[in-house]
Image (tube, rainbow, N blue to C red; front, side, top):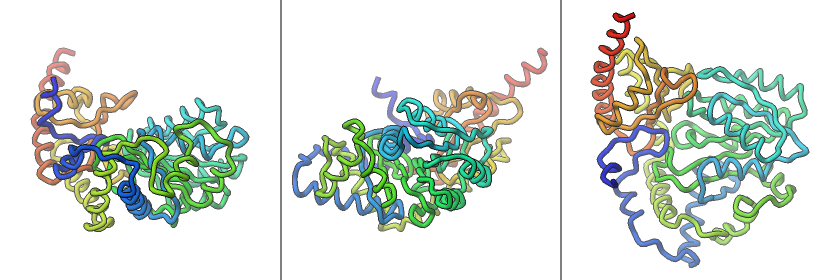
Length: 372
């Protein structure tokens, strides 16, 4: 059974391919974490994360998925007495809606057509017309591939005194991200995206404005209480047993990114995205969103090719994983990540497999047309 999970290439927007040297660190025996050495390692990780977010604020490390970090941020910074405005452009915008609804946090939403970006003017009109104290958005709506204009939106949020919370899970490290300069109060990241690590860790960055909001909020729950983490992290510790092996891998990965240059990492994602997108016309495929991220390309199928079937054939016949879609986009759009330990040779292999798969699907389409 385990052999099914070896010898494949992954182009998913999470999890992403992990480099062999990082995987080797993950195979070490996990050390005991209540030591001065582990505290020192944790404090160094926190400084590396602040540089990645471009913030002078604090960063909380959670052993949790990205959704866990989103919920922790919402529970810590939103109030039943306030009201949030949510930009909902797809699956992950809907995740903000679901979190607020489940926790009894009042909200309204701006719903977008799939693949479209939000007009900052529409956000300003809603903030001006309603008593909102929080703005929730995804920096990159991964279900459709749309990258939002965070600098413009951050300026609007600050102008209307709305706490600006960004799910930047598939943005930080792949696209430019200036948390402090763009007026972002809270930003969220996960390990399995541009950090190119296995899933299991998520991070909540908070500026002073968000920290003040957190301090004034009543205690909410135990595991996702960000104040408890901040208190323990001051001495380099976690309140509960963390994913110790992932801490070791994260420490090395942040050092690698620092040595290479954080800007170089963003440029590498941009180059891989362009390299892939330049080959799409020859494959009779199209980029789906008008404003895509470096992290991922949402690809529209043409000529009646079924995207869900294409994804299945890539997996079963070529051992290549790309991301399917759901809902109205299920048969029309699939997604290809440019994050993780990925190189141009990997993109070449993907495009060869795509060409073979598309050629195999065309006769099916042609026969169905002839029968009709």
